[in-house]
Length: 99
Image (cartoon, rainbow, N blue to C red; front, side, top):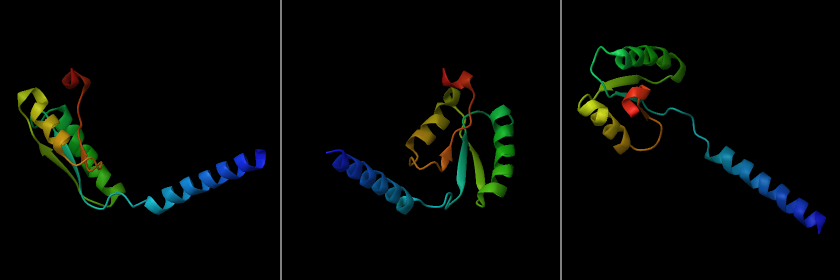
């Protein structure tokens, strides 16, 4: 009985490990977009532009910042919400905009 459990657990861990290795892909395959939900020239915009300039060196892909201001940040939040959930669209924001 103990051997059966040990073998089952071992095979299960092996299968999980193989699934993780085979499904892995290099990130990023295309440009990363930061959506600024506030006005240009603000803190989020400045920090986002600094992040993009540094991130391009490490990611090997362009990092682009777009401004989608309006509605107290809702336009930017909606743009990120509607984007495909693949971590290529990011939202730099502050906690004040989340409440």
